[in-house]
Length: 67
Image (tube, rainbow, N blue to C red; front, side, top):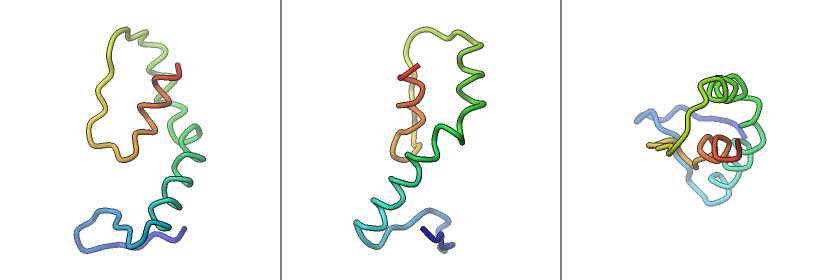
C-alpha cells in the first residue's frame, strides 16, 4: 500500500478497501515493529492493567495482552 502525505498529517482512508489494506499491513508487521518494545515490557514484569490511548487499530495492545 502506497502512503500519501496529507495536509492534516494523519492517515486518511478514502475507501473501506484502503482502511482494510492498512489494517492488514499493520497486523502483519506489528510483531517485527514492536519486538524490542515487547521485550522491554517483559523485562519490567509489569502486572495489572494496560491503557492504550489513541494508537489506531489497537495492535500493540493485542500484542501486549497476548504476553
